[in-house]
Length: 209
Image (cartoon, rainbow, N blue to C red; front, side):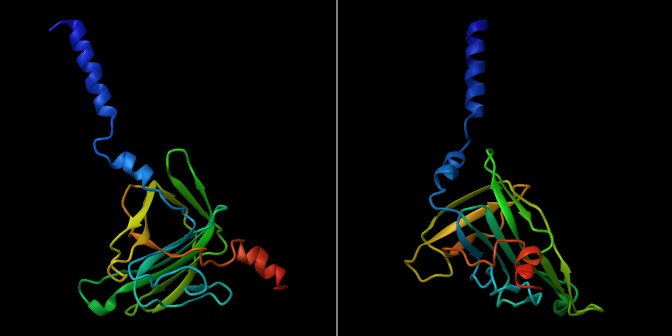
């Protein structure tokens, strides 16, 4: 085999290796078929954003019927997040731990397809429930920056929580390490959110607090 032919084959092999190994890389781009704006919720959609989940004035959570996550986005760069999650106890089933998390802030798109979520640090809260602990319930301030490494949305023809034959917009977010968050479906558009300003620095002061 001549050196010229070897060089051509090497270049061809390199070019092929740079192409997507499946259709997914291109499909994900084209699957973003609807706006990110709205309230998205996982599972049976019992977890949502807004006052139906957390009241920042009284600092009280409303316990949803089931666990799940919910994200809301506006078109002008604001987000809100709610989470209700369990940690099981392999020894004693009744000694599970649960956490309810709420935060909001701003988000930004980046050229590499990622999204960064920057919370207002004074506003977020987490409540930890531990039926077998010395303190069964405790609430703390919470603020966690999030990197969504990639994301896509699509029209789901078979969402499990809806009647047969009904479709819904679905949203898949990937964490910083590429792991998928639970799939969410569009719950409200426009989104169901608390005020997008820093509540404890602006809204309460505006009210004379």
